[in-house]
Length: 101
Length: 199
Image (cartoon, rainbow over all chains, first blue to last red; front, side, top):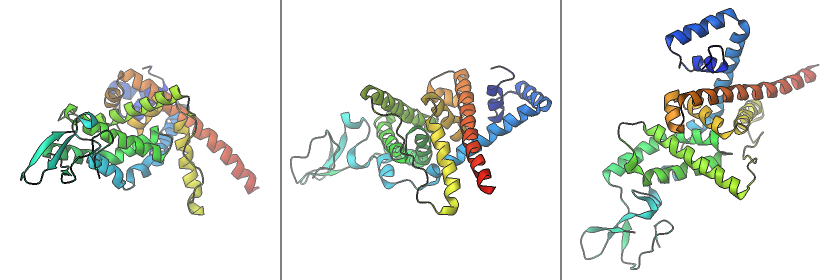
């Protein structure tokens, strides 16, 4: 990563720089208002980006997806469609027995 | 009537009734999966071309995850494991589309839907952002969603994407610059239109 670069600015915003790298970027920002503007622009577009997808996180999850996560409908389970394990109740037997589908 | 998935045999005897129960470990796994669904939906929405396609992707990811649940290592990050499954399925989808030469430029995103008038501008702006994201190359789109939206560290994102951290950094910087440029261009056009109206 180059010291004066968009990568450095982005990593700085993401808190991914070590202390030495961080101080270097801060000195660079102090020295150049154009770089400060660029940082601000990057920060703002990131905030807008998060806002643009917030509703997909905050909306109630549809029942179909919750069902899919719980393996409802028999579509999935350990081993998936290749080796479905389903418990059958057979009348007269009094218990359940596993059977590979 | 069979409750089984496609490809499974229907029960022969009507007297047999299937009881599908999860064992305790599977039930725990499923509840972990239910808990991350909001984040998976948000991530998928950034990859896919619309909300419906995104949810289809999440549904497929759930099925794959359940089928492979024994592969998940307790103590490792479950969300990263799931993001990886979503991403892999999506890449498979992209490749299949290319092979079938389907129109890959068609987005389900619609601008100016049925929102109340006073909120239309705000919703338009957010929809434009999503369209800008859709225009990014796939690998930039993915890293942008993983890091900037889902909050993964560079190291975690590198593990999900299966690339070095340096690659994450360069893709991410390119994605964020490209996004900013698209948004600035859009804002410039709208800004000048507004000024013209005001005069």
